[in-house]
Image (tube, rainbow, N blue to C red; front, side):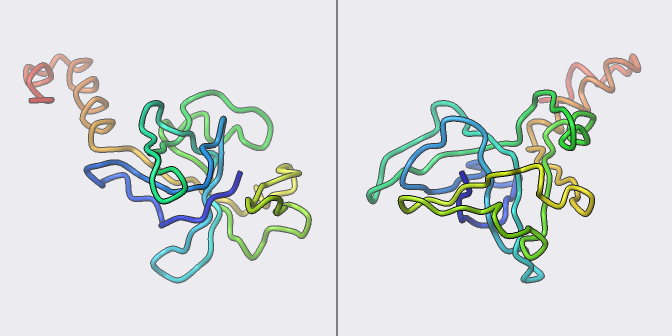
Length: 149
């Protein structure tokens, strides 16, 4: 599924939220415009379980980057936790974005422009604090246990 929404901002205190007429049951992608005006497709991302609420004939729900192994052309995501791919909308070939029943879908995802894609870090403040705390603990620095406070 491809959902039109705002450019993701992991620093938002209430999390990254989007709206759709249905809740994706697995990985989905977002279509957005960055601050430079470029149209992008970002993903895969996943629904944060238990975050959905019904309103205005659809659903609001939070999302995050998927933290699971990927193979093939998606493998670049594996070494960078909380990250996903960014594709330039204008470079996506015909036949990859398909519309049906009021929704848009990505099909034939192997034809996405993987070579020109970039990685986008969607780490929340909480993710960064956990990472830094673990790093300090590993280095036996006394503040590691107090870092999250």
